[in-house]
Length: 379
View 1 (tube, rainbow, N blue to C red):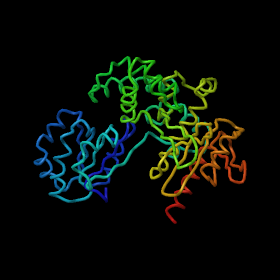
View 2 (view 1 turned 45 degrees about the horizontal axis):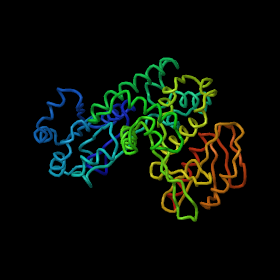
View 3 (view 1 turned 45 degrees about the vertical axis):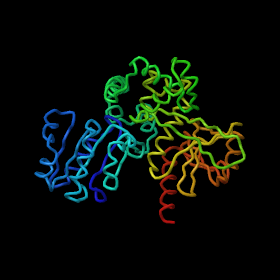
View 4 (view 1 turned 180 degrees about the horizontal axis):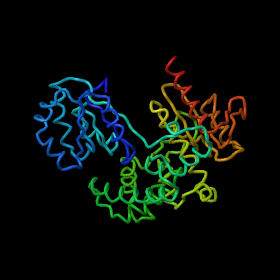
């Protein structure tokens, strides 16, 4: 708010954007909240120039800004007339890339913040049962804070249904609802695995390019995360396919009717679920680092690589109390000249597996990320 006239907070529906904005507003002398889903609020800003002229000193928050694409060009002249940082706060349930198409006129005037559902550092109380609860239920506030597991699962199922029905209409997609429901379940079954668009296309009876459009639909609504392969210039045959994850572990589990840890323990998605849960928490804890995975055609693999300039962090995810690394991980470390690998597992105490291989739980892994990020800033 101190750096740009316009700040956009983007994230999935129900992740807490409006709550955060209202909390920010409590600390401001003059704060106005406009909800574009409320017809009366839309009427209030029907004449934008008049509205902002009458509220020159206010910070105006506009919720669900993506519902009014013509808003962005008009905001440019308003911002330039009264060049004051913190004038406008935009909230949106569409991806930064999608908003950018409408916000090109605000280049240099707008800053972006992506708000995810609760990540582990935001709810950590150093209790294993809290981490398990967060893993099973995910980070959406109304799911995580539900009275019991059953209520949490009901909320998540309703969220998925309303999200699909609503966002399909708002995005202008003509995809049949049953098709997109089936495709989301297929993505859940491929969670954390290489995306084979041709195979998925054959299963649905659509083309490779149509599958990519479906993936983009979920990506732009923050439901999935596409992790691209890290491809340094090595004399090796590299995998070129991305991996796709359901970003919120609670949503993933709901698609499989999993509502508690015992159901998850006996499910084939168990290991992949832990991998996605760890990766999403780490990525959201290191927003300035670029995330990748590494895999060669021969199977040398690292689950998560974070890069920033010439710096690198590497992570393996093992949903066990006794993690064991295969030969492929060691070879991948040699390929990339990785000096230190952090294995994120279910252990209670941190230890060294090898001199350059650290083993710890998620809490310790996130502290490691923080220490590396601080070290990066100080250097």
